[in-house]
Length: 178
Image 1: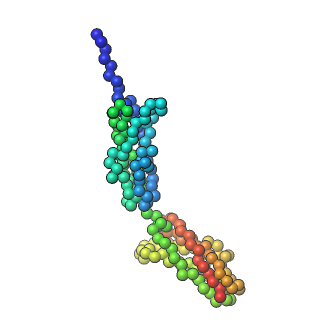
Image 2: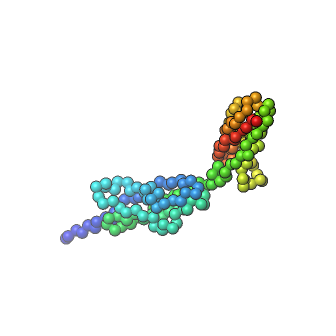
Image 3: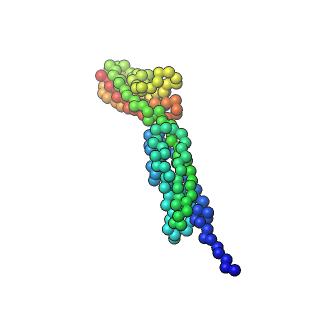
């Protein structure tokens, strides 16, 4: 009696795996970003490699919506069999430091009048920041750098703005003693 053994399909022999990816807000996810996350453990390196494709490319996150999206990927083996796997893609929330552009009016003081930290911090504006809710904290990085009013001239003072989400932004405030 002849014994017939069927060749086991590659899709039955191998199980693809994928790690996830975290993308910054505003950065679209590309097919390549997702494809390179897929691995096929124990697949022989000396054989023709399976083709990995994003099943529906228009489901890739555009970077404008924070949260998780599972992207379906198809693995097509050389024998024609296929596997499907989901690759998790997370998009970070839009960080406050990236949403807003700081501006400063600068500080000008007459000779003999020292510059106070509030003179510098009050010169910082965060256009379009919501007026309701917790506000950013503005601090002079090194108060010993503030002009004491005894020397005429221009000096840039480093200032840090800390937003309620914990992100920080930096700006130099021009200070003039006249």
